[in-house]
Image (cartoon, rainbow, N blue to C red; front, side):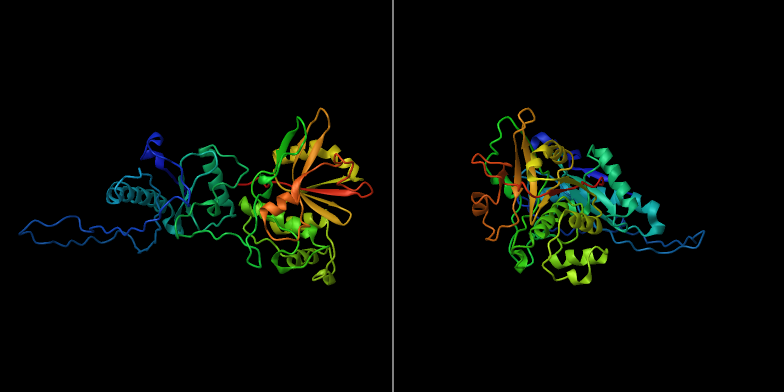
Length: 401
């Protein structure tokens, strides 16, 4: 029920620049008209109509097909020639593939639609034809994607061929840049601009994938002094969204509170309050909204956090998700660690949700709101409090395609 068409069948990779993004690609709409008659009759021949009764009861089924092909050509290839030699043959090939699928699914009213992908690790795009009746999470569609991952040599724990991963071009389904609820653009991956950690001989283990930076005062909500864990949770949910594990909206503070009331963790009066939440509450919300399981590490004092660097490094190397650190009345988002196993020296890559300024990347980085923090800096100051216990929430990566 699913088929793949690769552009490499048409063009050798060495002849063309295969760098393809929606930013450098042009979308051209083409209408193809074809002659439906078999051929013109010879002069003097009268048309003849013959009637052959159907051997069994017959019915007429009208099926609408969406054709969508992706072709490569050199930059100086004339458009007219590309249409006749690439586009039309490509449409015919795709129709042929769909015909075979429909022949076996005619009684089930298949709803076929092609989607184009360039998964990480592949240098040319692939086109997958999905039956959209099944949706994204239905078991059969998941099995189809798994089969494609196996055929293409893709990992079986990453959602690389979901419809939400498909390429878009020009004005055809262009994705809108994600904004917060008050309309301002959200910064992504702010840690990429920060200086080094200062750990000599350390091995750096970082978050795998993109996230959005949520902090105090976003979305027009004045949560200064109480909303840091909510903001850390929003950043974590944004990671799952951007890695295509989920399509739900990043929840607001009230929606987070509503979930905790619905599962019986909080009383109804909790909704609309300014009460703090911690790692346990975050794990409940992630399980309820995303079906994500979490591991929780408890430490008795901030002094003990460096002892967890080896375990945290393994988390980032195997799971790659953001970690929430909660202690006392403060919560932070952890994006990585730099750890020298021989010396024990380590640093934590902290994304601080307590920031209240504008989304100015330079100001955030220079102000240390995203940066490497040592448990005790070179001036003897402790970043983590010695007299507070800490809970570390380690969300797990779903094993799914």
